[in-house]
Image (tube, rainbow, N blue to C red; front, side, top):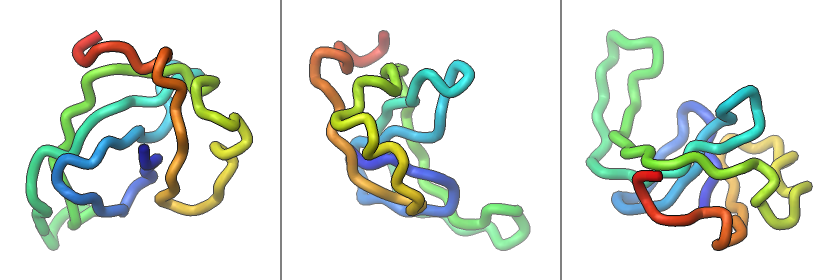
Length: 88
C-alpha cells in the first residue's frame, strides 16, 4: 500500500492511504479510479480521482515507525486484519 501526501501521482487501480483521519488516529484507504486531470487554474492542478471507502487505524501499519517517512509518497504494509471489507 502507498501512503500519499498532496501532489503525488498513482497508477489506475493502485491501493493507497491518504493523510490522517479522526484527529490523526486513522488513515483513509482507497483506490485510484481514473486518469490524471490537469486544471492549471486550480491551486493543486494535477489530480487523480480516488474512491476512499474505509478508514484503518494508524496503528495497523507494520512497523509503526514506517509512518515517520518524510517523503510525499512512500510504501507501507498494513495488517490485513485491520483492513476488513470495503465500504465499512
